[in-house]
Amino acid sequence: MAAITMLSKTKIRPNKAETPRPATMKSSDANCVVSKGTRIEGDFSSAESIRLDGVVIGQLKCEQRLVIGEAGRVEGNVKASETVVMGHIKGDVVVSGTLHLKGTAQIEGNIQAKFLVVEEGATYVGKCLVGAK
Image 1: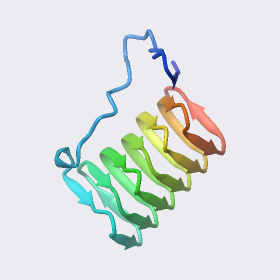
Image 2: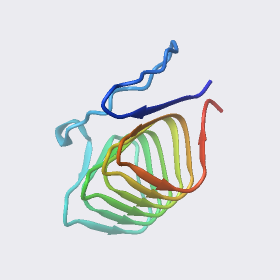
Image 3: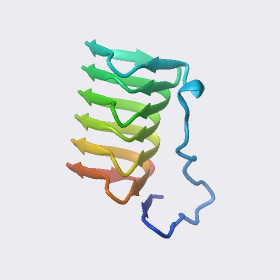
């Protein structure tokens, strides 16, 4: 079962029993916040949700929900349960649930996700594998 949704002016929703989660998350909803101006060098992992507005140079693993803000940047592979990208990732992305690429998202690397939601303006360069595994 694969669900890819391209969002533009009219919304298209998958008509499956299981649908992607909404993409909204405020920094107050995150258990871990990496603020703009913060730079982490080395592998970073959390069992809780993360809001990233800073920079991570290394692998990033989040067992729950990861939101990368417009100022957020990751230079390394990303693995998470649910992910919303508004910023930039240079590395491979593996998401066990839904990957939301907002209009400002830029990914340079391969994508693997159960569901993929792409807004107009988002870009990625790499291979994309979407569906249940």
